[in-house]
Length: 265
Image 1 (spheres, rainbow, N blue to C red):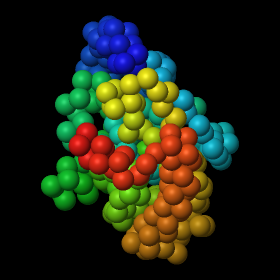
Image 2: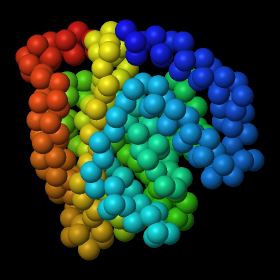
Image 3: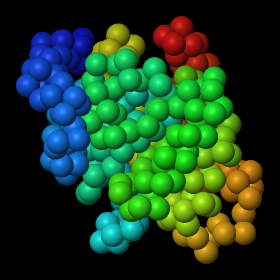
């Protein structure tokens, strides 16, 4: 209950204040504001959201990111919650953006964050639109504009103890066509923070693993389908390890937890 009270009486008023003091303006006038300035504002807000949602992030492999390299890179990660991109933004050492389903643009906070950071949307029912978005990200990477975060599952996993969802191979054409470094990552636990009634007085442990850095030399022989399967295997192995840590941490009884999560979703 404490988390819910903090969210209602502290976090929500803060977001409303940010919304009218700078979020709305930054999203409308973003072309007149330098990306670095926009990103700094968004990153501060993400850090505050994580703080007031009582989240602890356990990061492994952050040193693998080559932040001194001016070349932009691509991050691929599994997807459990709308909080996922906020975690990466909070930890980023330089501006980045992300791809989300088109419905996210209607969300008052995450949707505005997406717009402020020049993010891209995907329409699951429009293949032509998906191809256009992929081409736009490729162009951005080729022009060395910004780092990109993509969730190749295409939607969030509502039953996190069942493993990752099917990885869509189309997104792997981006690194293949740009020769950019790809960081394979895993998140586990982001399904908890926004479920205030299910997890009332609990500090949410979110595990973030930077699994591997893949360069053009690592994947140049792959076709997109083979590349997707290769990355899916990496993600699945780490995901299973994260799941075991989570089960021990929260003493989860899988069958009961799955039923509760199914009801909650």
